[in-house]
Image (cartoon, rainbow, N blue to C red; front, side, top):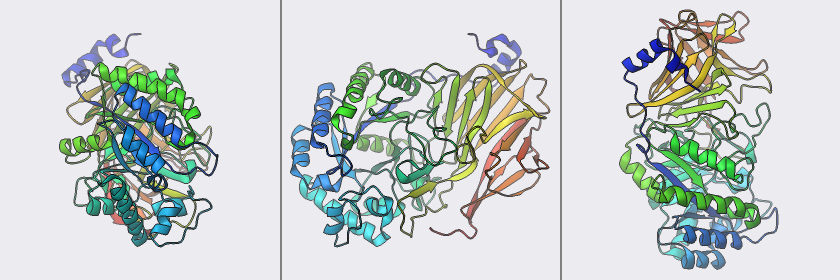
Length: 553
C-alpha cells in the first residue's frame, strides 16, 4: 500500500524541504544481553534448580553466545551452583550479583529474618527496600565478601527487579559496580510497580532515585541501568488496564504470547533490529532458573538459535551486561535519546506504537487503525526522590514512578481510556495510511503520517520537546490536543494559565509549557485543550525545582 505522503505531492515537498532523511540500516548498533539469574531455593513449587543452569550453560556454549549469570546469595553459598559455573562458563561469560534478599544473607549480617520462607518475594523482606539504609549496606557487605571469597573478584554487574538508590550508590561507591539491570515497566505485577521511566534501552539514574533518569547534573550516578525482559511495545502497556495489576507480554521464554511463541519472537526481533532506534536498540533475553527447565526449554532453545543467526550475519552484538555498560559509559556522558518503533503488532494488525525517550521525558504515540493518540508522557527530574531514599517499606508492595503528564494506564478504566488526542471541536481527528518514522540528527525522531482529509501530521520528538504540526489540511488552523482521563480518574493538575499546565504528583510540582498555544479547560472540567498556534502545538517540560510538602515515604 502506498504511503499517503506519496499520494500528496505538496506534503512530500514539505518533508523534503525540512531535510528529513531515513536512518540507514545498521547505522546504530543492535545490542543483546542474555541474562540468566540464579536462585538457590524455590518455596512455591519443588523443582530442580540446578538443571536449568546446566542446560543454559550448554546452550551458551553450543551457540557461542556470551551470557551474564547473576547469582542470588542462597545460590552463591551452594557449591552445586558455583562449581558448575566455574567449570562450564564460556570464556566471554560474566558472573555478577542478583540482589534480592534471602534468609542466610540476613542472618550472616546479624539481622533477624522476617520472611515466610528462606526466599520470600514480599518487598518488605525479599528486597533491599524492606530494610533501613544502614542494614542495606550490611547486606551488601555480606554479599560482596562471600562473592569475592567464592570467585576471587568482585562483581561488575548487579541486578534486581527493583533497585533502590542508597544500595546502588553504595555498591558503586564502595565496591566498584559499573552496570545494573532492573525490571521492565509494570503496574502491580508480583507486588511492585515501576511506571513512567526510561522505557527500554538504558539510562543513568539519579542518586536520589534509582528508577529516575538523571539530567546529567551532579546527581547523575554513572552506572547505566538496562531495562530487562523485552516488553511488547504495542500491547504490554494496556495489558490489564482498569485493573490493579498487569499481565506479562515479554521476551521471557515461558510466556505466550511472548518469548515462548516463535512467531512472536520473529516479530519482536524484526521490530527491534530493523526499525529506527536512534543511538542503539536493546533487548534482554534469558530466564531465571526458578521457572524450571521444562517451562523454558522450547522458547529458550528457539531464541538462542535465532540470536546466533542474527549475530552471524553481523546484524546484532550479543555481549555481557558488563560489556554493554562499559560501552555505554564510553559512548555517552549522559543518557542518550532512543526509540522503539513498531509499525504493526505481532499478528499483523494495524496496532502501532512509537516510543521515544530522552533524559528529560518519555512519550508514546499509539495507533489503533486510523485513530492516534499520545498514550503516555512522563517528565524526568533527577531531584524527585524515590520513596525508599531514607525510609523502608513495611508492606508487601513497592512503587517507583516518575512525573506523569499523560498516564494512559493509571488514568483509564476498561472502555474509557485516558489520552492526549487531536480534536477539532468535538470531532476526533484521524490519520490515514502507514506512518513514516525517521531519525533526524543524532537524538531526534520524526513521525509523518497522512491526515484523514489529505493533509499530513508531522510529529517531531527532540530531547527537550515534542512538536506536532498539521499541514495541508482543512483543520490546520482549528485543531487542538485534548487531555482527558476516565470519568472515575483524576489528572493531578494543580493549576492552569493561558499557556501552562501545572501538575502536582506525590507533593512534587512540575509543569507542561505549551509555548504559544493556549490552554483551556472544559466547562465541566473533564478535559483540557491545548489549541494549536499556526498549525503547531509544541510541548516543553518544566521539570520543577522540588517538592511542596512531599514526604520520603
